[in-house]
Length: 153
Image (cartoon, rainbow, N blue to C red; front, side):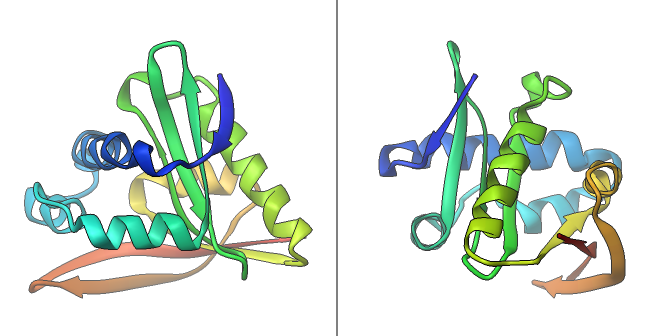
């Protein structure tokens, strides 16, 4: 596995990985309606391009292609961290998280915040993140529970 910076031609693979990860991994904690709001079948390509370009975005790749992706803003907000469903529990998320945390520290951040889905809460706790509060967002009339978590350095 190698971690590298995002390139624009990664976009389609990232959008596909995100959709599959949300609809397969998070299915144990969210309803179909919630999953469809979190990761719609037809994604907003412009939104994805803008978000991936403005943040520090990385991808993890192996011999078989994209294994995961993640990004963090210059202020220490961890926006995305997703792993391909066929590569869970192989250290991909941990390696990307470490890279993103090191980037945030290098930018002078002493706190990293993330809105974690229910499914990833234990992962973030294992890596030193503390629960700050439950956060419920509403999109298209569907309420989605996530957890605001933070890690201090």
